Length: 225
Image (spheres, rainbow, N blue to C red):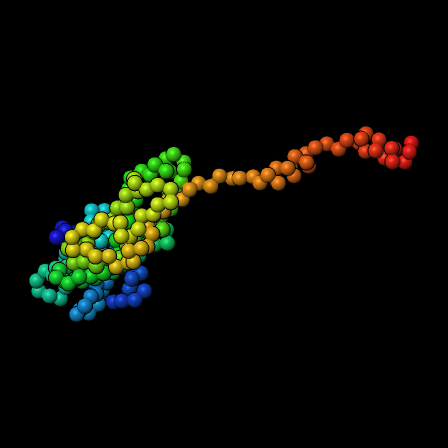
């Protein structure tokens, strides 16, 4: 089972846009926790702590959510994953985060990012171009088996080849939720510009200078001069 990362959040009162704006004005990031069998709870988290979590564990981290300010007498810890993370329009700071409570013995469906690796010879020799169609794939697994990411190795691809979903290396306990035939990466040939012979002939003819003397001589011969 993958390592569980830890982050502390605070219980907060109030909900809605007004309450969320108040949290942001105070330097915090509004959050919510929900999941099967529990009521939704309003929380807030320190943006600095959230940034450290994302850098160390990524968005698919299994998290021990330590909730302070809870009505319960003892400290409360809940296993969660990040379900949604919203950033400001400029993308420079998180504006809201959704935590989803999980059970370690129940499978969940989640999206995992795809990263291209390796070097494609067809590209380095300028015979082809690489196009990535998919940047994430859906998987089903236990929360402790969520892959951090998938790697699509393009080293063996040549012009006309495709790396499909079925070509992804799967860890034990992880199954794919997307069609195995979906293309992730394709290599296409570089098309050379071909000029039609008719176009070349037309350009040459247009470029030839008009011979005035020949036309005049032909006119004189026709009139008998």
